[in-house]
Length: 394
Image (tube, rainbow, N blue to C red; front, side, top):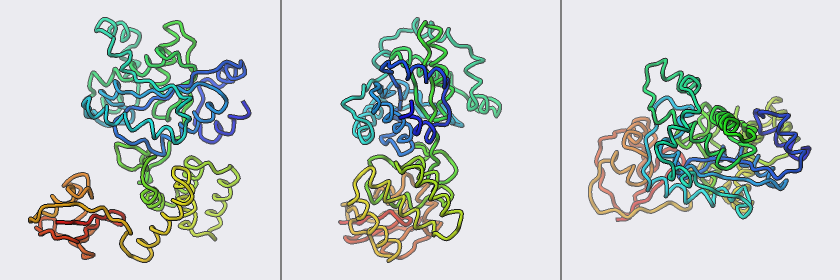
């Protein structure tokens, strides 16, 4: 237990039930430790790495890690923390996203020692009678106790009947896998406790629950989330990772050193003191943090190169060394249509907003009229914000 105590103290919010987990660990039994992730987006992010780090500690102690890809629960979309019903993904989208998860998980866990499962393995074999039997193990009152459901119902916001099944399905995953422990973010607490309850009702020893601390996203307010776009993906380029870390608010520096790096506790305490005494520029601490995170997912050479590139763009105000080139027909475009075409924004609405804010440049000149038309020519460079560039070739 002493080997894992440091991880539990630093990255864990809560253990349910602490005494039971300690007994399981002391028994010498090889425990089955479960983590699930729905392939709602192709990227896992460094927020997921908090719980993956907890799993890594268990794996290093010889326990069996079971990483479950929720290709079936993704059809619903986890409603945890959501203020509205999530869009249902197609089978093709789910499959495409799931394919990327192996390489990403392998950046932290030893994939050869990890049991990777899909919950479609059992849910595709269920008939309607099975689902009715499973639902009979829960009550509507219990399910709607969830804060997100309760808040939406109170505000008159629709809750889809299929959403009520999500915690039931996640709970059944634990039954199918005979999980001894389930690990997840604090937003997963209700779902994981549902698994504990269902296992007990079906005669299994209930799993213990470990909630990892939530990493705040780049916006400084919401949890890091694929859906909100405020995240750093595990497989992002070194330049992108470095730039995103440098963009975090100063009050997140300690949080990121604690949860997103492997720095010893002494280093985290040192960073706290440096910020408190006011003698150290927070930007210097962010640069150190960015180097450590890039090194963790790439290597030290990539971190040094990313820092040089960042300095070139943001300090020396020069263009990036490598700008992605897009081949386009020689024609006239509406600027608001061109930005998504060049992968600089996710939507026309976002593009229009950024143009009006003066965040868009064409060949280094700010453009504020979203409805202008431009005739593209070879060599034209378009910039959105401080970090996104695209070059056009006709």
